[in-house]
Image 1 (tube, rainbow, N blue to C red):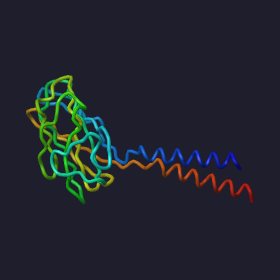
Image 2 (cartoon, helix red, strand yellow):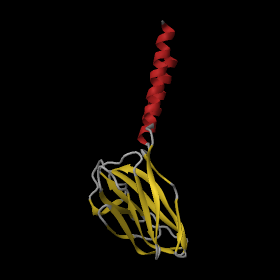
Image 3 (cartoon, rainbow, N blue to C red):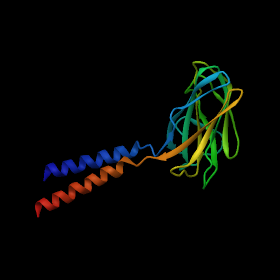
Image 4 (cartoon, one colour):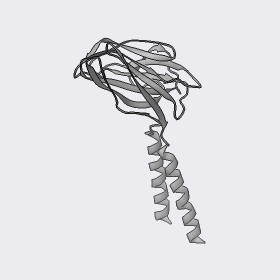
Length: 190
């Protein structure tokens, strides 16, 4: 019985630890590859968080404590990029804010503009071999399967469609396993 109790406790702890590091949304494709106007590179999905990311500064709007935040970074392989727009046409909400995590790349985000999408303009063009600081867009809510687009300004505008996918919380699987073990233990005793 002590071994069973220890095993159940371990599963519970693992499930809770998994829940704390859950990534509720992913973006596809990732990385978002682009090429055109003599430039090429990627827009990388850095991660998801609730509320303003650590070290983040809202440059437009205001990120609420429970807002869903998507974090990106642009990397340029050749040529340069002056700006990038992230748009996710969502029911039920428009973006609440756009911001940056200063010092996470080679080139700072100078400003954010837009209403139904957010356009991040860099302090200077992101050149070959460089990355931008992380930039983020926040929403009051996100939904599984939302479709949007990433548009990169390299002279001509290059637009790449994206889809948001919800990732199940690992803690749920841990709790399910815990329940199954408890049922097996009860049946074994009976």
